[in-house]
Image (cartoon, rainbow over all chains, first blue to last red; front, side, top):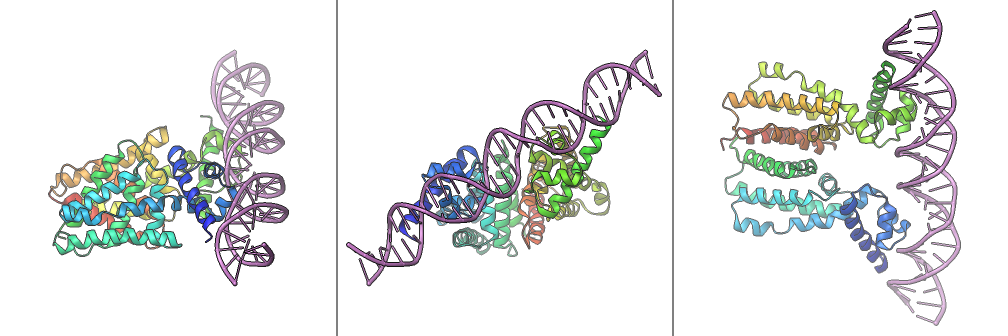
Length: 183
Length: 183
DNA sequence: CACTATATGGAGGATTCCTCCAGTTAACAA
DNA sequence: TTGTTAACTGGAGGAATCCTCCATATAGTG
């Protein structure tokens, strides 16, 4: 990709995050293009659909949330680390319209490069957390990374109304209790 | 409401379910109106927004899924009844575009009459299941109906891709194990 | 510097949304 | 049955949004 194209692409993503945060993901895409100082055609070339733009906008943030797993595992026992990490993740999703949707599409598909990269990051993070728990004998051995990813995605999708943040935190705790149950 | 209005309303809902099932919830609403044999204005009068229509379309099905809890509880121990009921629910949501979204809006709000009714049905069903488990000493006592509703909503929202049905079934089983854990 | 593949912007046709209002009809009383 | 009225209906059409096309501009290369 040409350097100018890369810059415009980044500008579009930045603008998209801002606009989505302020006014939701249903906003006309012209607004995003204007905010990015870019023609509407440029936006559509980089992101053919609204969904592609939403996914693109949050891929970076999802990646950042995946860092720091090592630190958590160093400071906390595996079960608490998993709980804390998932709660932190869901906390970041709440109030960011579209981010849960982006997470879901990243979890279920590896269609394009960016999605595949994020998918790998999320799965790697969850795998570290899961392995730590299994190695410590805290988690049952039949739980898969897919299970954790599905739970994370589901809980993220269900936040978005007042009070649902607390509820999501509770759900995560109950779920991880299930992961621990000697079943 | 006048009798003719009630009939048209029902026709719109039937058409909406059909069209949503065939072609997703993003379909132009003109299509729904045409299929229902109704003017577009009539559709908009009964359902001012697309979301209202989606919710309305699935309220009935959600209600039906809530029946039969008694029978489950008669045939199965409370934990298996809860698992079976939730799995059955999520199974019905899969492949019905928009139904998960309808469930979520019904769970989080009681804005209008239809939503309030469905909300009550879902909560009543879950309450029976929860109480049965708590009474039997199988479930921890600090789990709330809200928790179960949130989990059901979250798991429903995360289905919708091949293989996610099985995963949802697994998630429900793990979650209910968490509900049982003696915390 | 010249050349070319690549990227750009915005006009505008196509689609979809959603409101308005003139005409129709169900419900009810006499 | 008939008259009255409040409620309901359909669809035209203005407004908003989508998304493609293509003439122009520019980065990258030798």
